[in-house]
Length: 504
Image (cartoon, rainbow, N blue to C red; front, side, top):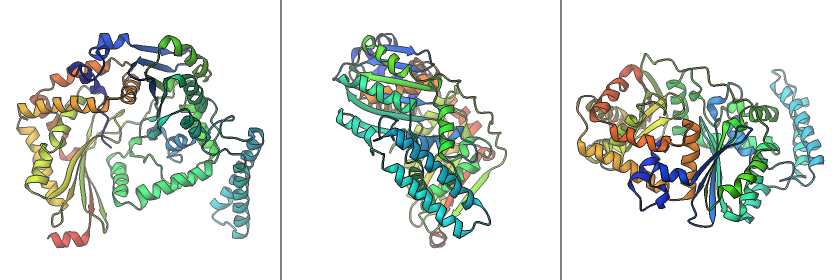
């Protein structure tokens, strides 16, 4: 839930020359080893040569997430992430011609079953046979599947770290391979976006439904976060859960998923960064050959709905026999705002380790909280978002005590300048954090793809360093005064009635 501090990565190259090769110490020398190539179909590819070892990592960034969904299809961005590992008409099948016919029968059987299931006057005598026919059709289609073949190909080639993730405003794919497997990678990565087969779709949908049960419906904190987001955002799509609402998971179809993929998985919406022992003049023809196969398409329209200014404090109270939790959120600008780095400073002063204000006050001194911290940029940073403060009361203490202590610290930021030492420590810690996050090809690839996609220019990595170094104590007071006001606040709590009585 912590917002990635990707734009700040430039500090790494400016202050720690010993950690990375000499070519990465400043923007000019960094640029000498970086090639940015835009294919005719609109796909942006970035190649950073780093011959430290005979391996490379890649990071594919797709500019789509839960925010691009509409009521009725929530969860589809995450669902396609699952489908992207199921293979193609060549990978993952024993006989694709026969499998395609079987998959068509699955669709037909599902629609018949689903229509009867949705009928308010459904006849069990009709529903049970339709359900069985749907299951039988799935079993018949499964007979043609070579399960997990995509992953096995990567494993056999020496690939490691294969994974993906979906958030409110992005979907990403990544792993690492030996340097002599570039052409295999280009074939695999382009194929799964060129020719995905939505096999095992309804079974995988069941997997996602179980994921929702574990993460949200049977998890008090998950339920609180879902209600909290839906309350803090009453108009913008950030209110929607990435995993989707259960009713949508039970209802959307393979055809819905394919339509979503065709709209958003267009080359103009994708950025790929490759970092490692690779030579641009060698791999660019390979990239053009394989990724050039992806058909061009229009970049999807921007979101129309903008979250209106909040004008009243909101509260979400979840009474549950669970550990009490307290949090409060305030609306803040998107990550591309000129004030973004000021919010980074505020978050770090409040929750950056054991010297932070929240830890010292709530955890160490008053001992009223077991943990206390800040989520800066929840649930995403592409659009106007939230800065969230969260604490877990210790036994015998209440959410109300935690609330008072948190707000004391927020008021301090408005009326009392942070110290020179605090400001210096924030800037030093940000640079140290980035060093740890960029000690491998995969970290650099992640940073490059994100910054290029989000800002339109990877050079923003370096320019942001100047913005961070220019943040003043007066800036912090100005932003805190404008942000931390009651009418801009949403409060969320888990309250255990028995624990509250004991504390009182």
